[in-house]
Image (cartoon, rainbow, N blue to C red; front, side, top):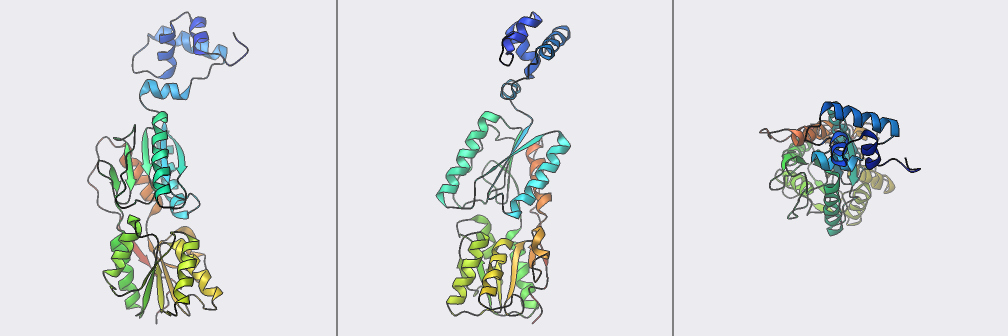
Length: 327
């Protein structure tokens, strides 16, 4: 035996079988191996300390025990909450999750990173792919090597299974709730308009309040801070702002404090997603709740299903908190 890690050829020689037989016995080929030969190969592998090559197993089986999750910014609680649901289902199925993050949205660079990440998955031959990044209007999504075991979260892409989210309906429900609380002049702090999630949330809100001012910025905490700062610098003093994500809303609250305006008391603030920390900020943030972990779990179950079931969009629910007191 060589001083380096034992090779498959050495295992085959030790067991007295062909290289092809050893490969089929250890790498999970669909072709059956005689039980006696299988035992000899396994015993030789153990005696020599041989570890099967995971990629070789994937090639032999045509798939692997790996589930690939592609997200945007992993630091964003929205994506980490979705990931927790994917991991939960993977654990139940005896699968391993690998996570690739394309980073905060940066236009065409994000599209390129996503395509590169999906192309790299071909070599891993994942059992399933879940794509949770923000969809970009007009951008094609192709998932190589796993097209029949893939699901996207949000607006779907042609030929791919999708877990729909009622972003439009949730934003419209929030607008109606804010009107019922007595707010009349409400501005929208939005992310980039080409993001489908942003567009759906803005359109849903404007379907109820068509004259609301919209300020676009990055779909991040800093973007919310910048949009709020720009809105105040313009001389506008709305009685409430709707940020299209909770992290943007948290940034907006910081900008209000810096301007000497108390969030909630001076200007109401509402967000979207209902990430776990919104109840811990001061004041607690009104938000449109999505069951993010359940959405992640549903996406992986959908990707793994033999047949895609008919599914309606995941409903959103408005949770009113101290950041939007009644006027």
